[in-house]
Length: 279
Image (cartoon, one colour):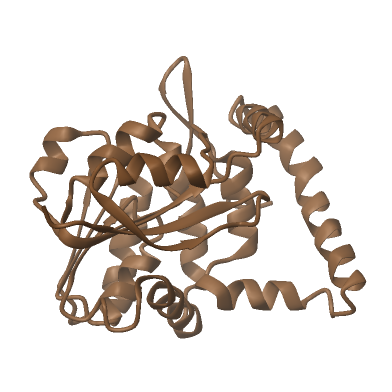
C-alpha cells in the first residue's frame, strides 16, 4: 500500500505513529463533497447555529478538515494546532486551498505543553476528535484542554472506547505496527483484508451492496475509510476510556454533558459535547 506512514519516536521507549504522513495522502481526496459532510457532522454534534460567530480551537488538527468545516460554518476565528509537523503542514495546505477569506491560523503545539496552552487563552468551542488518547498522557491532556473552554463554552472530544481485554489486544497490534518495517507489513497484510472481508460479509447479510458502506463512510464525516484504517492500526500511543469514566472526569472539572454519541460498546470513539458551567 503506497504512502503507508513510517514511525516517529520521541525516545527509544515510546514509539509514535506518524499521523501526519497518513493525512498527507488523504489531502488529495478532499473535495467539496467531503467538506460538506464534515460541516454537517460538526454541526450535528455541536448544534445548529452554535458555530457562527464563535471562536473555535482545534486541538490536534490532523488533516485540518474539521477546522475548515468550522471556518466554513462561520466561526469568527479558528486556530488549529498539532504536535505532528506533517499534520501541521497538512492543515496549512488545506487552509490555503479551501479556506480563503476565513480567519484561520495554524501552528505546531502540544496538548501536554502547559506553557503553550496558557498562551492560547479561552475559547467558545474547544474541539479534539480522536486525539487526546494518542498523547501518551490522556487524562492530563483532557484536563489541560478543558481549561481552554470559557464559561458556558463547549468542549467536544472523542475518545477511544474501553473494551477491556480486546483493547489490550489492539494495543499489542499497534505496538507491532510501530516496531519497524516487518511489523508494519505483518499488521497491514493481516488486518486490511480482514476489514474488507468483514465489511463485505456484513453488507451481504444486511442485503445491501458491499460498496454502500464506503459511500456512507465518506458522507458521515467526510473522511476516508482506508486512511482511517491505517490511523487505527498504527495509532500509538493508545489509551482508552469508558463513557462513564470520561463523563465523571470532565464533570468534576465544572462541565455538564450536553450530547453523547457512543460507538455502542464496540471498537471506535465515543463522542462527548460538554458545556462549561458558569461559576
